[in-house]
Structures are given as structure tokens and as C-alpha cells.
Amino acid sequence: MKSDSKIFNKPYARTAGIVYLLYFITAILAQIFSKTDTRYIVTNLISCGFYITLTMLLYILFNPVNKNISMLAAFCSLFGCFSTILYVIKADKLYINPLIFFGPYCILIGYLIYQSSFLPHFLGILLITAGVGWLVILTPLESYVSLYIKIFGFISEVVLMLWLIIKGVNIQKWHVQNNQ
Image (cartoon, rainbow, N blue to C red; front, side, top):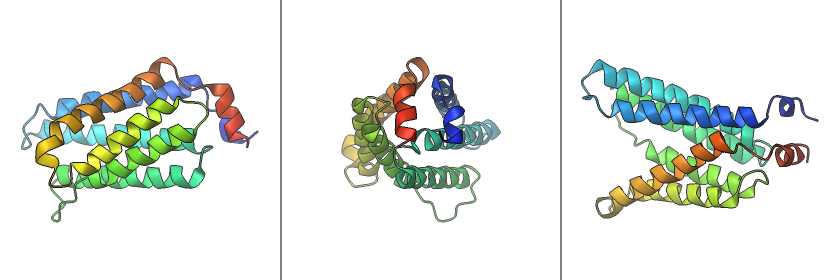
């Protein structure tokens, strides 16, 4: 048995769900403040900290499914967080929309969920679709579909978050996949 499998259990998957919830709360809270308000900067930085933590937790969760794709997904998320941080602190002179990283991140995590044996496939399909939607927002179609994509993407990620908090993962299947 691999050493990291001993630390991974249902409460750990639920920890990822709780961190996801904390990210959502702080990210939504940040939108209440004006972009010139210090509270906007602080809450955005805190939400990025939660998302970086979530990224690491999901990397560990999906490492047994496919180590390389899990690592690529983590890098996409970290680049997206870095892009967000630069934007929030106004250090990014050449703005790079974080969705260019978060779209592929959702697609890759969705793929890993779909390929896993310990989470239901529909969660993967939801996340893949949300990731494609985030990328569509970067196109000229954005003005026509942005609201719908944002609602669908939000719902997709909330469903995954709630699943992790309430159900966790099938720990026996995670251990089997981890030992293959």
C-alpha cells in the first residue's frame, strides 16, 4: 500500500469539499466590495489561498487515476490563481484572463472524475462541460452566453463541492485505484 493512501479517507475528501465551500464564500464576498477597496484585495487573496489548497487536495485525490493529468490540472489551476493574484494586486500589466487556465483545469478534473472509480461519472461530465463553457466565455460568443455559462459552471462546481462534503469518495474504490 502506498504511504499517501493511509492519510486519504472520507474525511479528507470532505476537507476538500469544505475548502471548496470556503473558496466560494470568500470569492462571492469579494464581489461585494469595490475593486478599489482593500477588503476586495484581501478577500480575493484569501479566496485564492483556499483555491490553491483545494488544488493540492484534488491533486492528491486524483493522483491514483492519472498522475500526469492530475499534475497538469494542478499546474493549470496554480497558473490561474497566479493570474488572478496579479490582477487583484494590479501587478499584471499584460492581463491574462484566468479562465484560460481554469477552463482546462475543470476539463482535466472532469476527465479524472470520469475516469475514476470512486466518484460518479456525472460529476465528471458536469465539470468537463463547465470547463468548455469557461473557454467559450473567452470567445466572441461571450456576450450571448456568458450568463448561462456562469450559472451552469457555478452549479456544476457547487454540485461537486456538495458531493465531496456530503458523500466524500468511495474509499474502498479509491484504495483499489491507488494500488493499481
